[in-house]
Length: 144
Image (cartoon, rainbow, N blue to C red):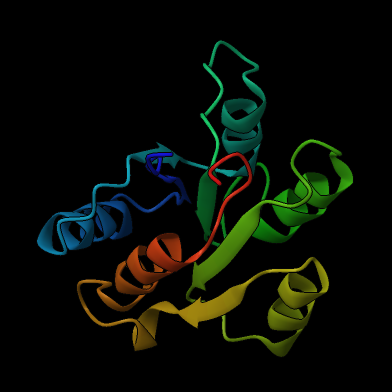
């Protein structure tokens, strides 16, 4: 069975960081479709197909910022894990927050990894490269 592309949902409110991630995807020639949500509220609507959004096709991975308006990353993770259809979603956190309580909260909500923007490189090449490898190595439901 041919492998479907894994969609990536970037939940990020900073336009510069969003553009940096988009450039990193292009530079690494990732075939993964990249969708952007500006906060956790919009991200949930995209995943659920609510609020006028078409639902994001599975499989998908989320790259999540912590510090956002309306619904921050920790609130989003909590809501995601409470939703029976979304609770197993793979989420990587990419944030400026190096606060221990944010890290503990993210891992407490089963974040797959917590990355600091200051350590990810100016063009965010580390995380997209990890996602590329992850998507190539992981077997997704419905793809065997």
